Length: 393
Image 1 (cartoon, rainbow, N blue to C red):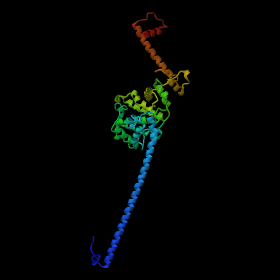
Image 2 (spheres, one colour):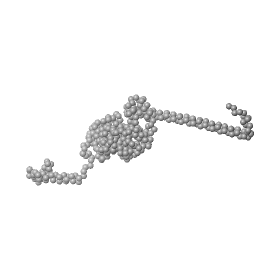
Image 3 (cartoon, rainbow, N blue to C red):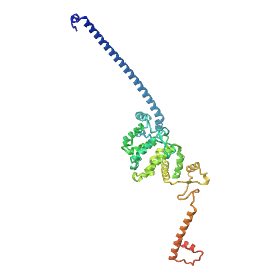
């Protein structure tokens, strides 16, 4: 495109104006060049930051994949290999899978949401705990908070608590809140979800609460005293955890007229979650049932004593456990006193004898008035005859 002769276009301008115009054009070109250089620098810095972010993201993904692989190989692969049922939100899907690779693929999809901060399936020593006066070892904070939330919302009055399942979506949300540390009881809409979380905690706990007891430790016929001795043999901190769970069941039994739960039903709920799969289920259920009753009698001030025959040992704790496992324990009959129990004082015995004498005398007088003695009584045996006739009556 031609705009005509340049000489003709510049004839009307003098030299100063032309120089000024050239200077303005040079300044405009310099500013445009500086702006283009600045944009190039920004683009270059943006590309560098994007590449660094991609590198960081790639590194984090590799670390996460390595963590998932280690966790899967150490925990969940062992569980699936032993046919042990994982009790998390994906329990039904994982338990129905026979192929280990399919189970590992499912865990790769579900576990990234839970691996950040886990409070379920973690040993008690690694959890944040609270020191309570009733127990020798600290209790995990998560179950203490769940117990307080359940009590404040009236969960112990709900029918079939710990047997009825809660809303799965509500349970998952509360589980995420507990892992994130933002759980609030005011946001709970389903009380049964709290009981589900307490069940999940004990089901996923490794080692289990009764793993310190061998499978052969549970007797065929268990009673309350035997259950108390077995509880005393549990090592800490599992012992304090079992005591806490028994006290939780006592709170349920306090409202059994409202929730329709008994000690036997609670034992059926907790027995599979506390002992190893190798232990006989019926014996574990009976042990948990007797343990709940034993804890209840302790709370009511009813001590239980176990007497052993002298030829079976010195009566120490080790001998008592051996006799229980062998089935040779001898329980003290109900209503009798042990050998070392304190006896009543002499004034009490005299008072009892005096009242018994008055009663027998009154009965003898009544018998004498109704039916005289067939044999003329002598002075020496009048009292004996009166007591005899009163006893016959």
